[in-house]
Amino acid sequence: GASGNGREVALLLGRKGAHVVIADFDQPGASKVADEVGTVGSREFVAHTTVDLSSSISLSDATKFTVSHFGGIDVIVNTAAIYPVPGPDGELADAQWARTFLVNVTGNYLLARQAEWVFKDQGLPSAMVLTSSANAVVPKKGSAAYDTSKTALNHLIRELAIKLSPHVRVNGIAPATVVAGSTMFPRDRVMQSLQKYTIAFSESETTEELRGKLADFYAQRTLTKRAILPQDCAAAMVWLASDQSGKTTGHVIPVDGGLPEAFLR
Image (cartoon, rainbow, N blue to C red; front, side, top):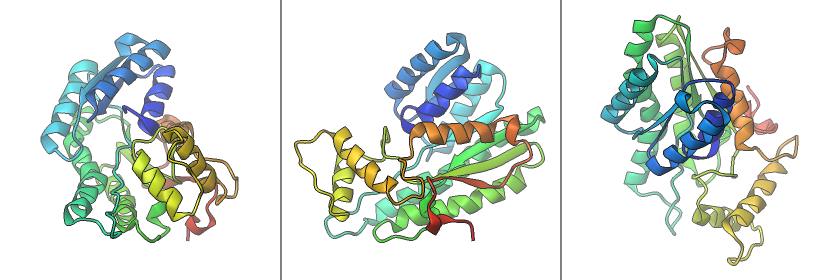
């Protein structure tokens, strides 16, 4: 929740009056967003904690922290993922491949497992919303680890929806590339992508200017010709977390501006 889609979800939930725990590996970032949520909602309704998505112990601690602060858990939203940047030879190190699956897939499984006891004890309608990607169904050159990890996450969503039913609904969103505000797009990855697509740029340009060029390029590949923003993803995730989607579980909702190659088939 310290940046990007997670930050926007936290802010939107805060505006709606939810009790929110910002959990992130970036502790200062989580604290900053908690302050922001407190200004749009109630400062008594927000807390923050450190979490490592690859650690069962850390996820267990974050779960207990949330229960101790607010008495239970109604909704879990996870937006965290990593996109490994290949080396000069275009290949990933073995450790990069393994960590991509650890965070993007196993981390979501561990998250559900560590929270399952809370859901069982409560016996109340609850929801989990996870973050997949349009890449899960659109194969591309140079992103095999990320793409296949998101494909695995799509099926994990279905498995968890079955396992945690009837009280817990589990769904996901599949955004097209979200460049704005994303920690997955550090300057080196943005420049690498611009070079890959032969988009002219200067190293004197700011990171945000470079991100803007890349976002515009991605937008032109969609039917709506509009860049996907963190606010777009947040709106879809909060809908899936709410009673408005109370009859929806085991599904992944596209937020991609209209990518024909990612159409359901």
